[in-house]
Image (cartoon, rainbow, N blue to C red; front, side, top):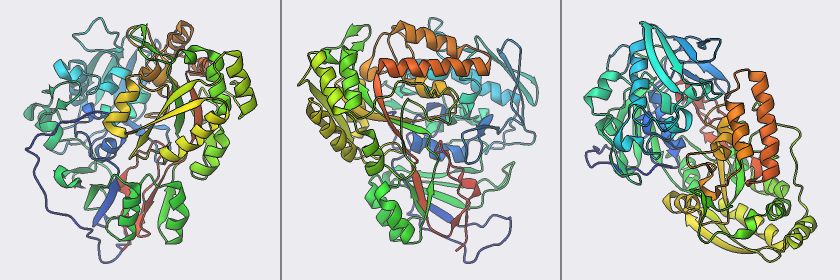
Length: 561
Protein backbone atom coordinates (compact mmCIF):
# COMPACT_ATOMS: atom_id res chain seq x y z
CA UNK A 1 0.00 0.00 0.00
CA UNK A 2 1.20 3.49 -0.80
CA UNK A 3 1.27 6.40 1.60
CA UNK A 4 -0.10 9.56 -0.04
CA UNK A 5 0.26 13.27 0.64
CA UNK A 6 -2.49 15.31 -1.01
CA UNK A 7 -2.00 19.04 -1.39
CA UNK A 8 -4.56 21.55 -0.18
CA UNK A 9 -5.44 22.60 -3.71
CA UNK A 10 -8.10 19.85 -3.91
CA UNK A 11 -11.40 21.62 -4.50
CA UNK A 12 -14.45 20.82 -2.41
CA UNK A 13 -17.65 19.73 -4.06
CA UNK A 14 -21.26 19.86 -3.06
CA UNK A 15 -22.72 16.69 -1.60
CA UNK A 16 -23.98 14.49 -4.40
CA UNK A 17 -27.11 12.40 -4.20
CA UNK A 18 -28.46 9.61 -6.33
CA UNK A 19 -30.15 10.99 -9.44
CA UNK A 20 -31.80 8.16 -11.30
CA UNK A 21 -33.81 8.44 -14.51
CA UNK A 22 -37.54 8.44 -13.93
CA UNK A 23 -38.19 5.58 -16.33
CA UNK A 24 -36.16 2.80 -17.93
CA UNK A 25 -34.97 3.70 -21.39
CA UNK A 26 -35.52 0.25 -22.89
CA UNK A 27 -32.95 1.05 -25.59
CA UNK A 28 -29.25 0.59 -26.22
CA UNK A 29 -28.65 4.27 -25.52
CA UNK A 30 -27.20 5.44 -22.23
CA UNK A 31 -29.85 5.39 -19.50
CA UNK A 32 -28.31 8.26 -17.58
CA UNK A 33 -28.51 8.88 -13.89
CA UNK A 34 -26.00 8.64 -11.07
CA UNK A 35 -24.68 5.54 -9.35
CA UNK A 36 -23.35 5.98 -5.80
CA UNK A 37 -20.97 3.18 -4.88
CA UNK A 38 -19.56 2.55 -1.42
CA UNK A 39 -15.78 2.16 -1.43
CA UNK A 40 -13.70 0.84 1.45
CA UNK A 41 -10.91 3.43 1.11
CA UNK A 42 -10.10 6.71 -0.62
CA UNK A 43 -8.13 6.48 -3.85
CA UNK A 44 -4.44 7.05 -3.24
CA UNK A 45 -3.58 9.02 -6.37
CA UNK A 46 -5.06 9.56 -9.85
CA UNK A 47 -1.98 8.92 -11.97
CA UNK A 48 -2.05 5.18 -12.75
CA UNK A 49 1.75 5.00 -12.96
CA UNK A 50 1.83 5.72 -9.22
CA UNK A 51 -1.19 3.61 -8.19
CA UNK A 52 -0.76 0.48 -6.10
CA UNK A 53 -4.04 -0.45 -4.39
CA UNK A 54 -7.41 -1.89 -5.35
CA UNK A 55 -9.63 1.04 -4.41
CA UNK A 56 -7.49 3.39 -6.48
CA UNK A 57 -7.53 0.94 -9.37
CA UNK A 58 -11.36 0.72 -9.20
CA UNK A 59 -11.63 4.41 -10.08
CA UNK A 60 -8.74 4.53 -12.55
CA UNK A 61 -10.08 1.60 -14.59
CA UNK A 62 -13.04 3.78 -15.55
CA UNK A 63 -10.88 6.74 -16.61
CA UNK A 64 -7.96 4.99 -18.31
CA UNK A 65 -7.27 2.13 -20.69
CA UNK A 66 -4.17 0.13 -21.54
CA UNK A 67 -3.12 -1.84 -24.57
CA UNK A 68 -4.68 -4.98 -23.10
CA UNK A 69 -7.42 -5.74 -20.59
CA UNK A 70 -9.15 -8.73 -19.05
CA UNK A 71 -12.15 -10.34 -20.72
CA UNK A 72 -15.42 -9.26 -19.15
CA UNK A 73 -16.09 -11.53 -16.17
CA UNK A 74 -12.81 -13.37 -16.66
CA UNK A 75 -9.08 -13.10 -15.97
CA UNK A 76 -8.21 -13.98 -19.58
CA UNK A 77 -6.35 -11.44 -21.71
CA UNK A 78 -8.18 -9.37 -24.32
CA UNK A 79 -7.26 -6.40 -26.57
CA UNK A 80 -8.15 -2.89 -25.45
CA UNK A 81 -6.36 0.06 -27.06
CA UNK A 82 -4.59 -2.55 -29.15
CA UNK A 83 -6.82 -4.15 -31.76
CA UNK A 84 -5.44 -7.62 -31.15
CA UNK A 85 -2.74 -9.46 -29.26
CA UNK A 86 0.78 -8.40 -30.27
CA UNK A 87 2.85 -10.12 -32.89
CA UNK A 88 5.86 -11.65 -31.12
CA UNK A 89 9.25 -12.22 -32.71
CA UNK A 90 10.75 -15.72 -32.71
CA UNK A 91 13.24 -14.77 -29.99
CA UNK A 92 10.42 -13.50 -27.77
CA UNK A 93 11.92 -10.01 -27.45
CA UNK A 94 9.94 -7.86 -29.91
CA UNK A 95 6.21 -7.15 -29.52
CA UNK A 96 4.34 -5.34 -32.28
CA UNK A 97 0.99 -3.82 -31.31
CA UNK A 98 -1.61 -2.69 -33.85
CA UNK A 99 -3.55 0.19 -32.29
CA UNK A 100 -7.14 1.40 -32.51
CA UNK A 101 -7.91 4.21 -34.92
CA UNK A 102 -9.94 7.30 -34.02
CA UNK A 103 -9.31 7.21 -30.27
CA UNK A 104 -8.90 10.49 -28.41
CA UNK A 105 -7.82 11.30 -24.89
CA UNK A 106 -10.20 13.30 -22.72
CA UNK A 107 -8.30 16.51 -23.57
CA UNK A 108 -8.71 15.95 -27.32
CA UNK A 109 -5.17 14.67 -27.90
CA UNK A 110 -4.97 11.87 -30.47
CA UNK A 111 -4.12 8.39 -29.25
CA UNK A 112 -1.45 6.83 -31.46
CA UNK A 113 1.85 4.96 -31.37
CA UNK A 114 3.76 8.06 -30.33
CA UNK A 115 1.49 8.39 -27.28
CA UNK A 116 2.15 4.76 -26.36
CA UNK A 117 5.91 5.25 -26.58
CA UNK A 118 5.73 8.54 -24.71
CA UNK A 119 4.24 6.64 -21.76
CA UNK A 120 6.71 3.76 -21.84
CA UNK A 121 9.64 6.16 -22.15
CA UNK A 122 8.22 8.22 -19.29
CA UNK A 123 8.05 5.21 -16.96
CA UNK A 124 11.55 4.07 -17.90
CA UNK A 125 13.03 7.54 -17.35
CA UNK A 126 11.52 8.33 -13.95
CA UNK A 127 14.05 9.95 -11.62
CA UNK A 128 14.24 11.08 -8.01
CA UNK A 129 11.40 10.10 -5.70
CA UNK A 130 9.45 8.68 -8.63
CA UNK A 131 11.86 5.74 -8.36
CA UNK A 132 10.69 4.93 -4.84
CA UNK A 133 9.14 1.44 -4.60
CA UNK A 134 6.18 3.02 -2.80
CA UNK A 135 5.54 5.20 -5.86
CA UNK A 136 6.33 3.03 -8.89
CA UNK A 137 6.20 -0.42 -7.32
CA UNK A 138 4.46 -2.06 -10.26
CA UNK A 139 6.94 -0.77 -12.87
CA UNK A 140 9.79 -2.08 -10.75
CA UNK A 141 8.13 -5.41 -10.06
CA UNK A 142 7.40 -6.08 -13.74
CA UNK A 143 10.11 -4.23 -15.65
CA UNK A 144 12.91 -3.66 -13.13
CA UNK A 145 14.95 -0.49 -12.84
CA UNK A 146 15.19 2.78 -14.73
CA UNK A 147 17.34 4.36 -17.42
CA UNK A 148 19.73 5.85 -14.84
CA UNK A 149 19.96 2.69 -12.68
CA UNK A 150 21.96 0.33 -14.94
CA UNK A 151 22.91 -1.75 -11.92
CA UNK A 152 19.26 -2.86 -11.63
CA UNK A 153 18.23 -5.34 -14.34
CA UNK A 154 15.46 -4.06 -16.61
CA UNK A 155 13.46 -5.99 -19.16
CA UNK A 156 12.44 -2.83 -21.07
CA UNK A 157 14.70 -1.84 -23.93
CA UNK A 158 12.78 0.55 -26.18
CA UNK A 159 9.47 1.58 -27.71
CA UNK A 160 9.21 2.89 -31.26
CA UNK A 161 6.38 4.12 -33.48
CA UNK A 162 6.62 2.11 -36.69
CA UNK A 163 3.75 4.19 -38.03
CA UNK A 164 0.84 6.12 -36.53
CA UNK A 165 -1.01 3.00 -35.40
CA UNK A 166 1.83 0.53 -34.84
CA UNK A 167 3.91 0.50 -31.66
CA UNK A 168 6.90 -1.82 -31.29
CA UNK A 169 8.19 -2.67 -27.82
CA UNK A 170 11.60 -4.30 -27.42
CA UNK A 171 12.57 -6.27 -24.31
CA UNK A 172 16.02 -7.18 -23.05
CA UNK A 173 15.01 -10.72 -22.12
CA UNK A 174 12.09 -13.12 -22.30
CA UNK A 175 9.70 -12.97 -19.37
CA UNK A 176 6.36 -14.58 -18.57
CA UNK A 177 5.16 -11.25 -17.17
CA UNK A 178 4.94 -9.57 -20.58
CA UNK A 179 2.49 -8.85 -22.12
CA UNK A 180 0.14 -10.22 -19.40
CA UNK A 181 1.07 -7.41 -16.98
CA UNK A 182 -0.25 -4.78 -19.40
CA UNK A 183 -3.75 -5.37 -18.02
CA UNK A 184 -2.61 -3.55 -14.85
CA UNK A 185 -4.00 0.00 -14.51
CA UNK A 186 -0.42 1.05 -13.69
CA UNK A 187 0.38 0.60 -17.39
CA UNK A 188 -2.59 2.59 -18.68
CA UNK A 189 -1.88 5.17 -21.37
CA UNK A 190 -2.09 8.85 -20.36
CA UNK A 191 -2.34 11.88 -22.61
CA UNK A 192 1.19 13.13 -23.37
CA UNK A 193 -0.20 16.67 -23.58
CA UNK A 194 -1.70 16.52 -20.09
CA UNK A 195 1.37 14.83 -18.61
CA UNK A 196 3.56 17.69 -19.79
CA UNK A 197 1.08 20.44 -18.96
CA UNK A 198 0.51 19.33 -15.37
CA UNK A 199 4.09 18.47 -14.35
CA UNK A 200 3.27 14.78 -14.02
CA UNK A 201 6.74 13.48 -13.18
CA UNK A 202 7.49 15.89 -10.33
CA UNK A 203 7.06 13.63 -7.30
CA UNK A 204 8.17 15.22 -4.05
CA UNK A 205 8.15 14.21 -0.41
CA UNK A 206 9.95 11.05 0.61
CA UNK A 207 9.61 7.28 0.40
CA UNK A 208 7.16 7.10 3.29
CA UNK A 209 5.08 10.13 2.31
CA UNK A 210 5.39 11.05 -1.36
CA UNK A 211 3.69 14.21 -2.59
CA UNK A 212 2.21 14.34 -6.05
CA UNK A 213 1.94 16.95 -8.82
CA UNK A 214 -1.28 18.46 -10.24
CA UNK A 215 -1.67 15.76 -12.89
CA UNK A 216 -1.94 13.03 -10.28
CA UNK A 217 -4.41 14.94 -8.09
CA UNK A 218 -6.65 16.98 -10.39
CA UNK A 219 -6.04 16.24 -14.07
CA UNK A 220 -6.01 12.49 -14.84
CA UNK A 221 -6.42 12.22 -18.60
CA UNK A 222 -7.03 8.88 -20.25
CA UNK A 223 -9.13 7.42 -23.06
CA UNK A 224 -11.70 5.59 -20.89
CA UNK A 225 -15.51 5.85 -20.86
CA UNK A 226 -15.47 8.19 -17.85
CA UNK A 227 -13.48 11.30 -16.94
CA UNK A 228 -12.81 13.01 -13.62
CA UNK A 229 -15.36 15.59 -12.50
CA UNK A 230 -14.25 16.20 -8.91
CA UNK A 231 -12.25 14.65 -6.08
CA UNK A 232 -13.66 15.84 -2.77
CA UNK A 233 -11.16 14.25 -0.45
CA UNK A 234 -12.45 16.08 2.62
CA UNK A 235 -15.82 14.34 2.28
CA UNK A 236 -14.47 11.07 0.89
CA UNK A 237 -16.09 11.29 -2.53
CA UNK A 238 -14.79 11.15 -6.06
CA UNK A 239 -17.11 11.86 -9.00
CA UNK A 240 -16.53 10.75 -12.57
CA UNK A 241 -18.75 11.62 -15.54
CA UNK A 242 -19.42 10.02 -18.91
CA UNK A 243 -16.93 10.87 -21.66
CA UNK A 244 -19.21 11.55 -24.61
CA UNK A 245 -16.48 11.19 -27.26
CA UNK A 246 -15.47 7.72 -26.12
CA UNK A 247 -14.37 5.50 -29.01
CA UNK A 248 -16.44 2.49 -27.91
CA UNK A 249 -19.93 1.96 -26.55
CA UNK A 250 -20.85 5.00 -24.47
CA UNK A 251 -21.24 4.54 -20.74
CA UNK A 252 -24.79 3.93 -19.55
CA UNK A 253 -24.54 6.34 -16.63
CA UNK A 254 -24.20 10.10 -16.50
CA UNK A 255 -21.90 9.87 -13.52
CA UNK A 256 -20.58 7.67 -10.75
CA UNK A 257 -19.83 8.79 -7.21
CA UNK A 258 -17.42 6.58 -5.28
CA UNK A 259 -18.12 7.34 -1.62
CA UNK A 260 -15.60 6.17 0.96
CA UNK A 261 -17.17 4.18 3.79
CA UNK A 262 -14.41 2.24 5.55
CA UNK A 263 -16.59 0.12 7.84
CA UNK A 264 -18.35 -2.86 6.24
CA UNK A 265 -21.35 -2.71 8.56
CA UNK A 266 -21.81 0.97 7.76
CA UNK A 267 -21.69 0.24 4.02
CA UNK A 268 -24.48 -2.30 4.50
CA UNK A 269 -26.57 0.15 6.52
CA UNK A 270 -26.08 2.88 3.91
CA UNK A 271 -27.28 0.51 1.19
CA UNK A 272 -30.33 -0.51 3.22
CA UNK A 273 -31.12 3.16 3.86
CA UNK A 274 -30.95 3.98 0.15
CA UNK A 275 -27.94 6.29 0.56
CA UNK A 276 -25.76 4.25 -1.81
CA UNK A 277 -26.59 1.94 -4.72
CA UNK A 278 -23.98 -0.72 -4.06
CA UNK A 279 -20.72 -1.62 -2.36
CA UNK A 280 -17.88 -4.12 -2.43
CA UNK A 281 -16.43 -6.60 0.08
CA UNK A 282 -19.72 -7.98 1.33
CA UNK A 283 -19.27 -9.87 4.61
CA UNK A 284 -20.11 -13.56 4.09
CA UNK A 285 -22.57 -13.45 6.98
CA UNK A 286 -24.50 -10.63 5.28
CA UNK A 287 -25.12 -12.32 1.94
CA UNK A 288 -28.27 -14.25 2.87
CA UNK A 289 -29.80 -11.19 4.57
CA UNK A 290 -29.06 -8.90 1.63
CA UNK A 291 -30.48 -11.37 -0.88
CA UNK A 292 -33.56 -11.77 1.31
CA UNK A 293 -34.11 -8.02 1.15
CA UNK A 294 -34.03 -8.14 -2.64
CA UNK A 295 -30.54 -6.80 -3.25
CA UNK A 296 -28.46 -8.34 -6.04
CA UNK A 297 -25.34 -10.01 -4.63
CA UNK A 298 -22.72 -10.59 -7.34
CA UNK A 299 -20.16 -13.24 -6.47
CA UNK A 300 -16.84 -13.28 -8.26
CA UNK A 301 -14.79 -16.35 -9.10
CA UNK A 302 -11.97 -16.82 -6.59
CA UNK A 303 -8.70 -15.37 -7.88
CA UNK A 304 -6.85 -14.81 -4.64
CA UNK A 305 -4.99 -16.44 -1.77
CA UNK A 306 -5.13 -16.03 2.02
CA UNK A 307 -1.96 -17.20 3.71
CA UNK A 308 -0.31 -17.31 7.12
CA UNK A 309 3.08 -15.67 6.78
CA UNK A 310 6.04 -17.19 8.65
CA UNK A 311 9.04 -15.01 9.44
CA UNK A 312 12.35 -16.84 8.96
CA UNK A 313 14.26 -13.69 9.81
CA UNK A 314 16.52 -12.95 6.85
CA UNK A 315 16.66 -9.24 6.09
CA UNK A 316 19.34 -7.69 3.87
CA UNK A 317 21.39 -10.85 4.15
CA UNK A 318 21.42 -11.04 7.96
CA UNK A 319 19.12 -12.38 10.63
CA UNK A 320 16.74 -9.73 11.90
CA UNK A 321 16.93 -8.84 15.60
CA UNK A 322 14.34 -10.47 17.80
CA UNK A 323 13.26 -13.09 15.28
CA UNK A 324 12.11 -16.43 16.65
CA UNK A 325 14.89 -18.91 15.72
CA UNK A 326 12.50 -21.86 15.94
CA UNK A 327 10.83 -20.77 12.69
CA UNK A 328 13.99 -21.56 10.70
CA UNK A 329 13.32 -25.26 11.45
CA UNK A 330 11.19 -26.85 8.74
CA UNK A 331 9.60 -29.15 11.34
CA UNK A 332 8.22 -26.14 13.21
CA UNK A 333 6.82 -24.67 10.00
CA UNK A 334 5.26 -28.04 9.21
CA UNK A 335 3.81 -28.14 12.73
CA UNK A 336 2.16 -24.78 12.10
CA UNK A 337 0.71 -26.04 8.81
CA UNK A 338 -0.72 -29.22 10.34
CA UNK A 339 -2.16 -27.27 13.30
CA UNK A 340 -4.43 -25.06 11.15
CA UNK A 341 -7.97 -26.34 10.53
CA UNK A 342 -8.33 -24.75 7.13
CA UNK A 343 -11.55 -26.56 6.32
CA UNK A 344 -13.17 -25.02 9.39
CA UNK A 345 -12.00 -21.55 8.35
CA UNK A 346 -13.43 -22.03 4.87
CA UNK A 347 -16.81 -23.23 6.11
CA UNK A 348 -17.21 -20.84 9.04
CA UNK A 349 -15.46 -17.64 7.98
CA UNK A 350 -15.62 -17.43 4.19
CA UNK A 351 -18.47 -17.23 1.65
CA UNK A 352 -19.97 -20.18 -0.18
CA UNK A 353 -17.63 -21.33 -2.92
CA UNK A 354 -14.44 -20.76 -0.95
CA UNK A 355 -11.94 -23.62 -1.06
CA UNK A 356 -8.97 -24.82 0.96
CA UNK A 357 -5.73 -23.78 -0.71
CA UNK A 358 -3.06 -26.40 -1.32
CA UNK A 359 -0.65 -23.87 -2.86
CA UNK A 360 -0.33 -20.16 -3.48
CA UNK A 361 -2.48 -19.88 -6.59
CA UNK A 362 -5.96 -21.17 -7.57
CA UNK A 363 -6.31 -24.09 -9.96
CA UNK A 364 -7.50 -21.78 -12.77
CA UNK A 365 -3.94 -20.46 -13.27
CA UNK A 366 -1.53 -22.32 -15.54
CA UNK A 367 1.21 -23.72 -13.33
CA UNK A 368 -1.04 -25.03 -10.55
CA UNK A 369 0.12 -28.50 -9.54
CA UNK A 370 -1.94 -31.49 -8.44
CA UNK A 371 1.18 -33.06 -6.88
CA UNK A 372 2.06 -30.66 -4.06
CA UNK A 373 2.67 -31.90 -0.53
CA UNK A 374 -0.47 -31.40 1.53
CA UNK A 375 -0.70 -30.61 5.23
CA UNK A 376 -4.01 -31.96 6.55
CA UNK A 377 -5.32 -30.78 9.90
CA UNK A 378 -3.56 -33.06 12.41
CA UNK A 379 -2.90 -31.60 15.90
CA UNK A 380 -1.25 -34.84 17.05
CA UNK A 381 1.27 -34.74 14.21
CA UNK A 382 1.82 -31.06 14.89
CA UNK A 383 2.67 -31.78 18.54
CA UNK A 384 4.96 -34.63 17.45
CA UNK A 385 6.87 -32.36 15.05
CA UNK A 386 7.28 -29.72 17.74
CA UNK A 387 8.63 -32.31 20.15
CA UNK A 388 11.09 -33.62 17.56
CA UNK A 389 12.30 -30.05 16.96
CA UNK A 390 12.63 -29.39 20.68
CA UNK A 391 10.19 -26.51 20.24
CA UNK A 392 7.18 -27.51 22.33
CA UNK A 393 5.73 -24.41 23.98
CA UNK A 394 7.26 -22.03 21.42
CA UNK A 395 5.75 -18.55 21.73
CA UNK A 396 4.59 -16.99 18.47
CA UNK A 397 3.87 -13.28 18.09
CA UNK A 398 0.74 -13.57 15.94
CA UNK A 399 -0.15 -10.27 14.23
CA UNK A 400 -3.55 -9.63 12.65
CA UNK A 401 -5.14 -6.45 11.21
CA UNK A 402 -8.10 -4.47 12.46
CA UNK A 403 -10.50 -2.03 10.74
CA UNK A 404 -10.11 -3.75 7.36
CA UNK A 405 -11.87 -6.22 5.13
CA UNK A 406 -10.17 -7.82 2.16
CA UNK A 407 -11.57 -10.12 -0.58
CA UNK A 408 -9.49 -13.00 0.77
CA UNK A 409 -9.97 -12.04 4.44
CA UNK A 410 -13.43 -10.58 5.19
CA UNK A 411 -13.10 -10.72 9.01
CA UNK A 412 -9.43 -10.88 10.11
CA UNK A 413 -10.22 -11.00 13.85
CA UNK A 414 -12.54 -13.98 13.47
CA UNK A 415 -10.01 -15.86 11.32
CA UNK A 416 -7.30 -15.07 13.86
CA UNK A 417 -9.40 -16.54 16.68
CA UNK A 418 -9.77 -19.87 14.87
CA UNK A 419 -6.09 -20.10 13.98
CA UNK A 420 -4.93 -18.97 17.42
CA UNK A 421 -6.94 -21.69 19.11
CA UNK A 422 -5.67 -24.27 16.60
CA UNK A 423 -2.07 -23.35 17.32
CA UNK A 424 -2.55 -23.37 21.08
CA UNK A 425 -4.18 -26.79 20.87
CA UNK A 426 -1.07 -28.04 19.04
CA UNK A 427 1.34 -26.82 21.73
CA UNK A 428 2.24 -23.28 20.71
CA UNK A 429 1.87 -20.25 22.96
CA UNK A 430 0.25 -17.34 21.13
CA UNK A 431 1.01 -13.69 21.80
CA UNK A 432 -1.67 -11.76 19.88
CA UNK A 433 -0.92 -8.35 18.37
CA UNK A 434 -3.77 -6.43 16.68
CA UNK A 435 -2.93 -3.31 14.67
CA UNK A 436 -4.80 -0.95 12.32
CA UNK A 437 -4.23 -2.02 8.72
CA UNK A 438 -2.62 1.05 7.19
CA UNK A 439 0.07 1.94 7.94
CA UNK A 440 0.63 0.25 11.33
CA UNK A 441 -0.03 -3.37 10.40
CA UNK A 442 1.55 -3.22 6.97
CA UNK A 443 4.62 -1.45 8.30
CA UNK A 444 5.00 -3.84 11.24
CA UNK A 445 4.77 -6.99 9.17
CA UNK A 446 7.02 -5.63 6.42
CA UNK A 447 9.57 -4.76 9.10
CA UNK A 448 9.64 -8.32 10.37
CA UNK A 449 8.08 -7.66 13.78
CA UNK A 450 5.65 -10.58 13.52
CA UNK A 451 6.53 -14.25 13.92
CA UNK A 452 3.39 -15.16 12.01
CA UNK A 453 0.66 -13.02 10.51
CA UNK A 454 -2.34 -12.95 8.20
CA UNK A 455 -2.04 -11.59 4.71
CA UNK A 456 -3.17 -12.37 1.19
CA UNK A 457 -3.23 -11.38 -2.44
CA UNK A 458 -5.68 -10.82 -5.27
CA UNK A 459 -3.72 -11.33 -8.46
CA UNK A 460 -3.10 -8.40 -10.77
CA UNK A 461 -3.08 -10.49 -13.93
CA UNK A 462 -3.46 -14.10 -15.00
CA UNK A 463 0.06 -15.44 -14.74
CA UNK A 464 1.71 -17.84 -12.31
CA UNK A 465 4.55 -15.42 -11.60
CA UNK A 466 2.11 -12.78 -10.39
CA UNK A 467 1.04 -15.15 -7.63
CA UNK A 468 4.19 -16.95 -6.52
CA UNK A 469 6.92 -14.75 -7.98
CA UNK A 470 5.47 -11.72 -6.21
CA UNK A 471 6.23 -13.41 -2.88
CA UNK A 472 8.92 -15.99 -3.29
CA UNK A 473 11.34 -14.87 -6.01
CA UNK A 474 14.62 -13.15 -5.20
CA UNK A 475 15.09 -9.39 -4.92
CA UNK A 476 18.15 -7.15 -4.75
CA UNK A 477 20.39 -8.28 -1.92
CA UNK A 478 19.97 -11.98 -2.65
CA UNK A 479 16.98 -12.64 -0.35
CA UNK A 480 13.33 -13.34 -1.08
CA UNK A 481 10.77 -10.66 -1.84
CA UNK A 482 8.93 -11.64 1.33
CA UNK A 483 9.94 -8.62 3.39
CA UNK A 484 7.96 -9.93 6.34
CA UNK A 485 10.03 -13.10 6.53
CA UNK A 486 12.80 -13.08 4.02
CA UNK A 487 14.78 -16.22 3.34
CA UNK A 488 17.66 -17.36 1.20
CA UNK A 489 16.92 -20.36 -1.02
CA UNK A 490 19.08 -20.26 -4.11
CA UNK A 491 17.49 -23.41 -5.54
CA UNK A 492 14.11 -21.68 -5.57
CA UNK A 493 15.58 -18.47 -6.99
CA UNK A 494 17.25 -20.36 -9.83
CA UNK A 495 13.98 -22.18 -10.58
CA UNK A 496 12.15 -18.84 -10.80
CA UNK A 497 14.72 -17.47 -13.22
CA UNK A 498 14.34 -20.54 -15.45
CA UNK A 499 10.53 -20.46 -15.43
CA UNK A 500 10.17 -16.72 -16.00
CA UNK A 501 12.58 -16.76 -18.96
CA UNK A 502 11.16 -19.86 -20.68
CA UNK A 503 9.63 -18.74 -24.01
CA UNK A 504 7.56 -21.88 -24.64
CA UNK A 505 4.21 -21.62 -22.75
CA UNK A 506 3.82 -25.37 -22.25
CA UNK A 507 7.33 -25.79 -20.91
CA UNK A 508 6.88 -22.73 -18.70
CA UNK A 509 3.71 -24.20 -17.20
CA UNK A 510 5.60 -27.35 -16.25
CA UNK A 511 8.35 -25.32 -14.63
CA UNK A 512 5.80 -23.38 -12.56
CA UNK A 513 4.17 -26.63 -11.48
CA UNK A 514 7.56 -27.80 -10.22
CA UNK A 515 8.04 -24.47 -8.46
CA UNK A 516 4.72 -24.77 -6.65
CA UNK A 517 5.79 -28.16 -5.35
CA UNK A 518 9.16 -26.82 -4.16
CA UNK A 519 7.57 -23.81 -2.44
CA UNK A 520 5.03 -25.88 -0.54
CA UNK A 521 7.78 -28.25 0.59
CA UNK A 522 9.86 -25.31 1.83
CA UNK A 523 6.85 -23.65 3.56
CA UNK A 524 7.82 -19.97 3.72
CA UNK A 525 4.12 -19.43 4.51
CA UNK A 526 1.02 -21.61 4.84
CA UNK A 527 -1.60 -21.35 2.06
CA UNK A 528 -5.04 -21.16 3.67
CA UNK A 529 -7.87 -20.52 1.22
CA UNK A 530 -9.24 -19.07 -1.99
CA UNK A 531 -12.41 -17.02 -1.45
CA UNK A 532 -14.95 -15.70 -3.97
CA UNK A 533 -15.51 -12.09 -2.84
CA UNK A 534 -18.89 -10.52 -3.47
CA UNK A 535 -20.22 -7.07 -4.25
CA UNK A 536 -23.86 -6.03 -3.93
CA UNK A 537 -26.09 -3.59 -5.80
CA UNK A 538 -29.71 -2.48 -5.74
CA UNK A 539 -32.12 -4.50 -7.89
CA UNK A 540 -32.46 -1.61 -10.34
CA UNK A 541 -28.70 -1.68 -11.10
CA UNK A 542 -28.10 -3.76 -14.21
CA UNK A 543 -25.10 -4.67 -16.32
CA UNK A 544 -22.37 -4.84 -13.67
CA UNK A 545 -20.36 -7.99 -14.45
CA UNK A 546 -18.29 -9.32 -11.53
CA UNK A 547 -14.59 -9.79 -12.30
CA UNK A 548 -12.31 -12.34 -10.62
CA UNK A 549 -9.61 -9.65 -10.60
CA UNK A 550 -12.07 -7.21 -8.93
CA UNK A 551 -11.59 -5.12 -12.09
CA UNK A 552 -15.23 -4.34 -12.87
CA UNK A 553 -16.07 -2.09 -15.83
CA UNK A 554 -18.82 0.30 -14.72
CA UNK A 555 -19.47 1.60 -18.25
CA UNK A 556 -21.88 -1.30 -18.86
CA UNK A 557 -24.09 -0.32 -15.90
CA UNK A 558 -27.58 1.05 -16.39
CA UNK A 559 -30.34 2.00 -13.94
CA UNK A 560 -33.89 0.79 -14.53
CA UNK A 561 -35.60 2.94 -11.90
